[in-house]
Image (cartoon, rainbow, N blue to C red; front, side):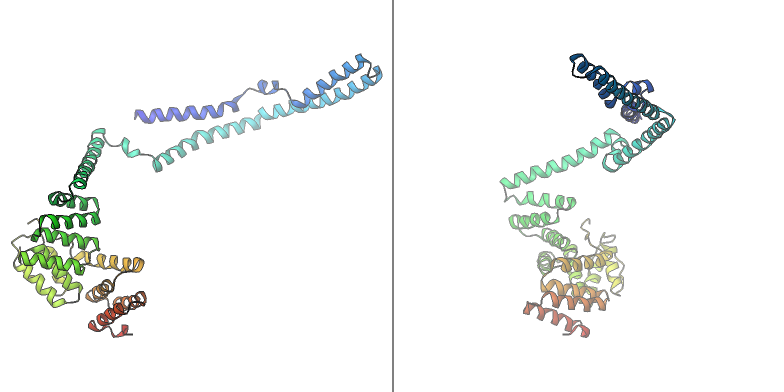
Length: 368
């Protein structure tokens, strides 16, 4: 509260400094010398000096002084009238209006600008909470900086890459996480969990699309550990995206039946299976997949937007067409096939890939 009182006093002082000149007394305004009045007075003095030097005759000097005096009187009368008008009742009303406007509008504008560009939230949180939040962020950034400095000197430290990879995901640096997991696999060797994590971050980097490269990583993980739930889940997602519905339903069902009671990925798999019209076996690990059934529409939309704005490979266009077909959005699948042909007009092999996908999905309306 004290800070607001201080700001109010500072604002009032600034406003008064601006309004002070408007409150000058009438006498002060009248005391100011008008340039025209000063000119005629100097002219009368000059005529008197010319008479004394003999330049003008006494009669000429008197006539000139009389004319200059009349002009002086007119100038003096006009100046006095103007001065009185300036400080009269109309001027008083203007001053009051200006004062009211300044005292009300200036603080309002100042508060609006402060709310838009300032940091009012800093006054609503205790300093201890602000310090803790800033400290946590600084600690994380400092830790990441230290690890990155260490890895710059020791790029073959696979353990360091494996430690920093999930931190990159938390920070939203997905591309850096992909590189970190890739380095961890390279220097620590392939394991089922390490490969599953690597494949998952590749899927995240593609907005939920299980690319052919990621699918190979998951297949390798399953070869090392047939029970790897994360790898099996994403292989089922890949089959679903490829339009292999029965294969996907079977993979989801087998994953559920082999999962322990209360497995964290159970609900996600049931939703995916239900979306395909499959049964929901009763089955029940902190290794739950990060992408669920509710994300499928989002990831397809993200893929479509990326292909529209940045382009992509024939395989990615084919995957988009499959995804629309899986979702039952046949019109969008047909439109995607047509856009793919336009984007790949100079790529004969790519056009063959799209045509083959259209035939596989029986998109006869999309046939060339």
